Amino acid sequence: MQKEKEVNNCRDCKSTSMCFHHLYPDELDFISSKKKQLCYEQGENLFKQGAFSPYVIYVVEGLVKLHLQTGNNKKLNIKIAKTGDFLAFSSVFGDDYYNYTAVALKDSKVCMIDKQALFQLMKKNSEFAIRIASRNCRDENRLLELVTDINYKHMRGKLASALLYLSSKEFDGLSVFSYLSRQDIAEFASISTESAIKFLKEFEKEGIVSIAGKCVEVIDASRLSDISEKG
Image (cartoon, rainbow, N blue to C red; front, side):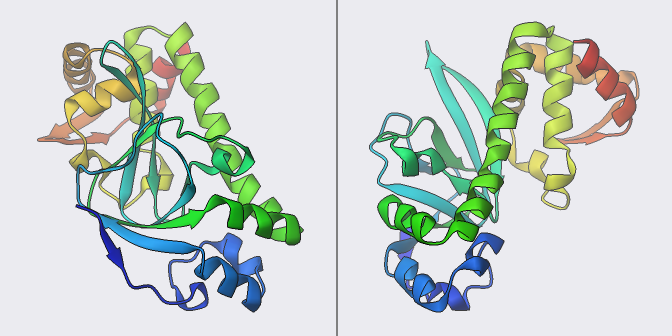
């Protein structure tokens, strides 16, 4: 269950995004007064797709899985957010409802920032606006990759793309796979759990990955990239 934490001014926070380093002291005081910090336990929803979105969420600590509900109880995992990432940033520009669901993969701490307050700061401080907007442009690239994978790749190619994403440098040292079930991996690839298990075993036999319990280690990223590119 989420618990509200007493937080200090953003000026004193060691987990503050680099974006906030471009704010003046009075601006940091302002945004500090317009946020609250919450702790979520592993498996808890931070917010649900379709719910009203009064906040932009900043991940202070932890890992958060984002997924789309695509109908008929099917899910598509779109990304994993980590320390320093913003969630629901589009709400600043008029989205009144969350476009996806966010679930804590591990115990996580987040700041819920009033979206109107954030918008005011972006209008006032152009350097801050550019920094925070450019940081969130990566989400668009990630979504374009997903569309390509879903529409143009076969199942092996889809799984290869998902494994490359989950083992990418941005997750170095975070042991992402230890928090993911085989169903989670399948939902990143938009294939069935049975197919994910089958192709993981094939990749292991081919010497492309090593599997130990829940953990998957990519041994031959070059061959996995070839499978991903060929679809």
